[in-house]
Amino acid sequence: MTEREGTGTATVVGAGIAGLATATGLRRAGWTVTVLERRTEPKRYGAAAHAMTPNLGQGACTAILDADALTRAVAAAPPGPAALAAALRAYDRERRRSAQRTAFASRTLHRLMSVERTWLRDAAVRLLPG
Image (cartoon, helix red, strand yellow):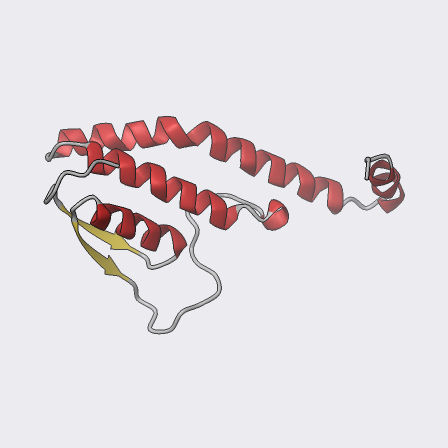
């Protein structure tokens, strides 16, 4: 993250883990940030803008990594819509492959653990070391 002071203003919609992490990162980079949240009380879950099944427990971790990458990309961009668009493309390039791999692994584990023929799953799990 760059340390330029007063680089811009941002509105973060959603005070979930990713929204708050993004807002915090932008504030540390010198941005003026407003966080909007429609709920008046905290909840244990959020909208989560990714297609992550819960099987690996990586939803929150992925959200934090996404927020960090987004914050660094936006904070490093000069002011202006064209630069913001370029920053969003840079964020996408950095995070897409890793997030897709994690989502795929989570879906694969879900399929393995929710099979109808549990004897086959149980036999496969017994072959694992440990």
